[in-house]
Length: 533
Image (cartoon, rainbow, N blue to C red):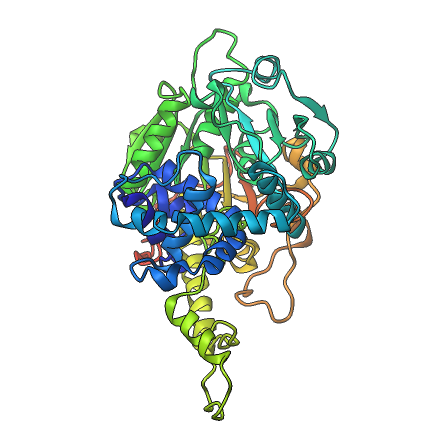
């Protein structure tokens, strides 16, 4: 029964506690994280309908032990899950729902018929269709793991019953129809990446379970591809993924390096993958193992990137670094955000509603508008100030991380990315580090758009120039450097989350390797080790 309490805890946590996956997969739970995630995601698909059933049945007015959130999760499984409520038959909360099964089933059937649906499955399709109509199309992106398989092999096996389409728009049209046709779209920007409809079942396939297929948002694939370019077989030197958990970008680097084997068949490049959080490092290790790249990846668990010594002998052959540090997460799409569920009315709200429906013998008291239809209070100026202060702290820390990467003696390439849409964390940080003494002394610059990997060279969303009221713009980028920055915007026709990435490059013999001045201390309150993408 802990499953429902733990799912409720995830959903009711503080707003700054991270994305849905981050909350679930870094928490300490009795239930399997995947089971918690599945329950939350499935309940969010049908929350409005379940709320209607619970309210119509009057469940919460008869069962004071149930909260609105618990009732939503429990009734979802009671009505829509094939296995029913995942709890012993004698458990009090299960009994609290099943005592009212006749009324719940009656209201469920009444609402289903009212929607013109002949079966439960038809109802679910109808509800999902309504949800898709109100939201931007969000495909399921799948990356082929070249360490274990190839695109050709997967198209012949896992996707043998799928047909290709020429665009995401065509894929979206198929997903919005009632057709059972299976389609895939082969991405034009990232090698070995394809998209399928959001309702396609891929996680039950052997290829997914065995690590040959990896679910990864398209935008999250940009950093590794931008770092290694179109010819990873020519890469020379080792690589550091400085903020690596949960491991998608690390395993993408390994996949790209595996896509074309060295002529002598040997794996010559090592990837050092690290994260400051011990709990997230465990997830990173599991991801590396599942992807079959333990022979190439060295995980440094609980290792703070800023505490690495660039002159450590282990890192003397490091020629590239991938950095995806903590950020505001403002570009994370609703799929990864904490769902804002439509909850059944609580017992007090029901009482208030009933009272308001009675004949009014007295005037309503001023301020007595705290019911469910009351307008929310406006955000206070202190909230905005706190957000601005946090962005400033994040941008300062992000700059320190990049400047630390610039100090690795053999490094000639660095990518910096965030899942943020704020210019202060993106172009503002790039401008700031370019003006730093370490960047000027060692010859670091932004890689021009014309020199970028071919798939990203033609990507249309580029950097954002500052406006007169943009905060944190003491340094600004040139038009050429702004054009070199890569952007993604959430919930648009490209099917990505909000994202930013820029590549820094230098000539191997540029600059002098002088003794660095003392580094600034960083804010441990902000430093969380890595992003959640």
